[in-house]
Length: 343
Image (cartoon, rainbow, N blue to C red; front, side):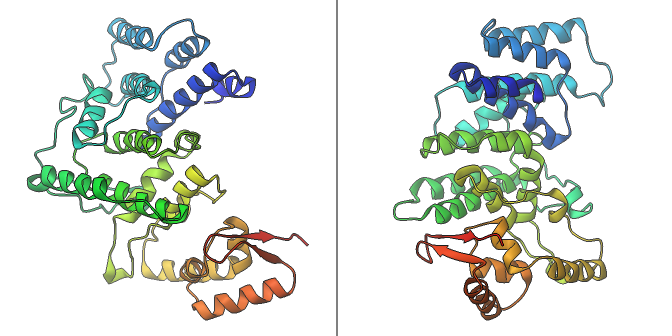
């Protein structure tokens, strides 16, 4: 990934934009633990330099793997290389239609020749063991309801109005939509990469053209794990669905916030005893002041949920911090933010 940083530092618009696209394309392979080859990296550099087009990149990759076939079924470097080039192509295009067909088309374009089911709705039920859930699986939509569920979610989002919403409310709604879309898991494989590309294109359509898309390059696995945590619950063990992590990711992405994105923090504990112990440690280590430092737009309700303490206790702590000069409020309670005064 560092191979492209020089183009970002140089600041030449054309090269810089291409470098950003390639970083996203390569970084997104991490959601499935894939790493592109050195050949793909060097070919991408030629594209950034303007020596070859994206079509020539794709052609070179195809020829390379015809000449150097991969016989090891566990080696998915060819997939990583081809899909990276196709992501770079799609993200370079100024086209988009908000529709189920567009979603299916993105999957087909990414995985044609890689998966037999590219662009096709799965006709079987699936489960996937998740690291963040210690081997448990999210309950994905059943094969019988996939098409209808997909069309329903798109129809609901299409008629939704963002008018009058604050930026935080917009982020929360986008979190709802994209997590529902991902949970359908309409494809056998490649759902997260397809969803990420669709989300980037949709955000552009909504006017978020200067978002920090590099987050998908550096934290694509966090993005996937956050989607998992939104869609998993086990009430018998006190585990609830939470959008906290996905909202943190989107807030960094769209608002330029600096929320800490750590995969380990999302991982469920193996049993209730360990969970209780870790929650106790968290309460000891995290304070109201720590959370405000991490996220200057955090609300009292969010702090209450994170620290598992009452809202009245949070408000009392905030009052103390304001009175001793540790923090100050800039703007209104609804749209303002906290200014931390280091002492």
